[in-house]
Figure 1 (tube, each protein chain N blue to C red):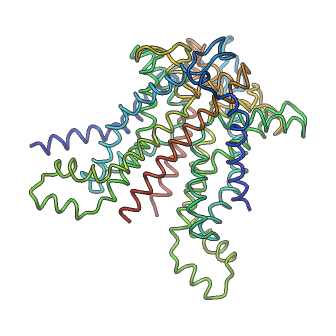
Figure 2 (figure 1 turned 180 degrees about the vertical axis):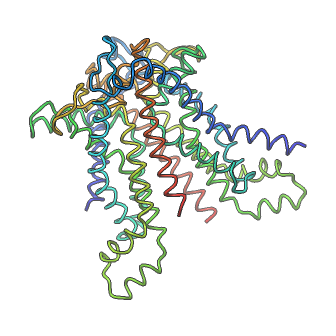
Figure 3 (figure 1 turned 90 degrees about the vertical axis):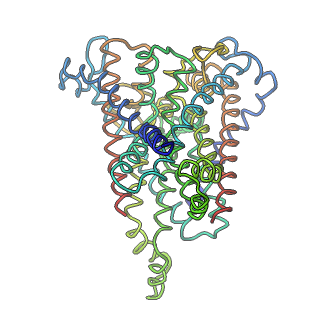
Length: 277
Length: 261
């Protein structure tokens, strides 16, 4: 009797995560979607955003989000993979034991601190070296690239470690060097884990808000080069939610809905990839 | 080589903030009220705000997180239910904090009428850290040896008794690790709390007062250029808390692993 009640109660509790997810989905869409029908898709997917004049075009923000995300991947993937390969294949257990928690610590640093470092170091550096405002696609890409490193490193590391040792022994036995083994055998064998790590990193980059607001400049236009200022979906929400009302607020929720769809799609892909192994 | 660069970047960030921030720290900075929007005075209201919001989040998230994990490990054997619950937790873990901010704002602040408050902020953070607690607790419970459960059953213990008296106490360090990691996430969060807890600089007197957490205070100081020295000081306090929290979680986890593997 006591056990059956306990099981039912626990089931209810266990459904809390999925219920929260549904609740989030419901509220974001309920707030944002009606506006889409009111103003039309043409208005919503244009580049003209001036909420006071009923123009809610988010195209330049979508492009902005994509640009900084791609930039973050260009910075994050080589470093992330290099770290994972070094940790899994080329370092002693002692080095692994010290470096892994240190890299995981990177994930614990709050995003506002990354943004702050961007403001005080990276932005002035870019301004002096390349000209322009400094607050730019480049600055946001570099900081986001660093921020997604821990995600890429820890998931790829796990998939390198999961490759059976017999693979490596077989490769050495036919005379392959360590480096040949890594490139020709381990990278393909660990491929799906690496891809999952990259996709989750992508999700983090596209969803990051505070660091991006602080260093991307937030100008409302499609950037012409990587030294131009850029505004993302997330920064628009965070910058304007404080004072927005009516249709303007609804438009911010619609931005949230677009972001939410992208993130959930990325998550599902990542879960499927890791689940298949 | 590239690994070295990564580690150097990490140390650089921490050392740079500390170098500029440690000089700002003093008893007054930690115990005085904030004056003149943050240009003068200390950060006591933000320290208390962070503490209250985090405590609310942990009190709510821990039973849900631990309960979910117990159900996942002890009551499901593969199957659809397990897949649904795991999917929910995985997806929730990937949702960006600004989405939690939007949700908390429309649901807790407006729909439930809780206003900008410690409670709204804490509830929003609770939803955010549930997946962290589920995942860590799940691993901890899985690692409790099967024989422990069998001994309990053979002595006539029921399933619930076994879980409460054998499994959970054994898995406790692992569960605590999850809770502490959750604390770390809650303390460092900005986007999800700025629209739910607000940014009032008063000292919170109840769960319904609006408050400003350390991370939010630091964000406002730095972004609006109110006071760079105070921003460095606040960042130093924030990083020290995060490092301490992560260090404790790491030590706990290792002691736990050393015991069972």
